[in-house]
Image (cartoon, rainbow, N blue to C red; front, side, top):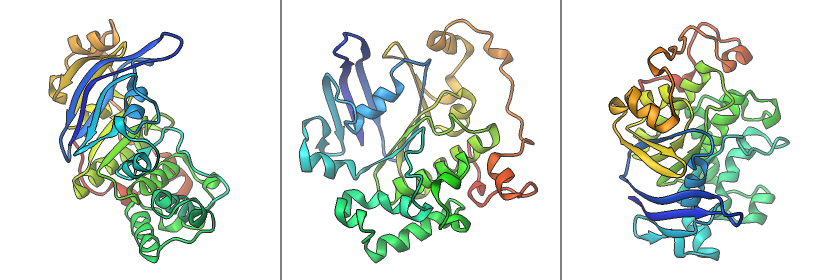
Length: 280
């Protein structure tokens, strides 16, 4: 479904971010990108939707050569790629519903979005998505009144409102506590399964990557040094990716921690609706 061939990125300063990336992502697969800071994980994701321009190589989404597009054709192609950002990228003064509906910008255009003139079917779908991610109680809340986990769920709903074929997820758990992090990753995993969506998730937490991804790709200095099943991610391979460390003593996350969403809602005794279902 998604194919990267010989993709490289070198900045005008001469710094190399990516070198000869070869990847194929089939439909429905959840792939985690791991590696040290500066390895090129975020750059790779942003090259796919051309938020960062690759220096060379080919990026193909189904039958569309992304690297050859510009203007209207590029904007049209980006509808197929839902982006979930590390810092959420919400408009703080807008409500949860308004932020989710901004996912229709690629379809309705700037002025209709600015004037809040969305198709009725988009509004109905936004309600349905907010119910799915467990935010029906917060539809009219301003984004700046939400916790980090709630903000990330708004970002997920917004990305899905585009009806994408591919999710590009940049550090979805970086600012979240351990329990909320697992809830968010479980939600992404479940939604990909429900919609047969492929996803690339840039993530620092190796334990979460192993638990929720179908496949793990390790980057180091802009190059792929591992590509395989989570079960193959041994201590030796982690050393290849990150450098020397006693990987066998990495502590397991604690399941009895209270998540930030539960603190905000007072629901200490029950899992939120979005956490229904299993994860890997």
